Length: 294
Figure 1 (cartoon, rainbow, N blue to C red):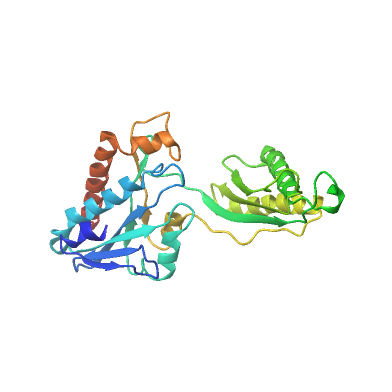
Figure 2: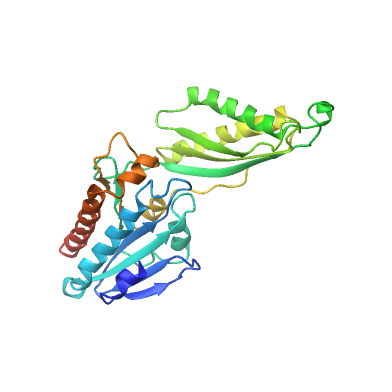
């Protein structure tokens, strides 16, 4: 990203905001300050299954397109290289450290299976769950153990039943990352990573404690003290709370493949994805120009 923006005359800063992979590149000196977010991130095991290669390239393209026009239009353009969107919340950290201070508007584009002028975002909380039990020989002395894997199982069953009474649009999903290492040993530790979503902050505020009580139920049922630490949330949504923000979706015409599937990874390196890069770059550049003439 830094190399792509260096040639057109941007003032490029590497490793800024205490993040070694963050970039802040600025060009122009006009009174209207527009930020273009270049998210770059991938998913374990399936790579660019959410198209961050397209996101970053389109942002760079929009910045390059605007570089020679910014002063004539009365614009200051900042391209923000924002890492770790997939669960890391890079934009949140950058926002807290001043990256979005002084912006009049922020934008990015994101590939999807179909076009959307605005993404229907959700309020999100995520947390890691861990239970600590007591090991014992599962065949000889199981009564001496405290089964941490059972606690996770109870919690998952409780969440499955809870889903029947959650509101439309609410989502609870996660993975168990540890649940024992040998079948003849009572598991003394279990861990999982869970995400709770709701269409509104009010809905999330109501849903999250209900989910946490499912995990508390697992601890109580298995005679464990377990519990979750605090969670985080999605990051472009956080930006929208401090500066006017858009986040349209660029269709790759790849249904039934959708984001976070291996098939979508493949779709992100096709001619349709290349067109999405150019379409996204042009759309964001024109949006900045439109803002300059308002």
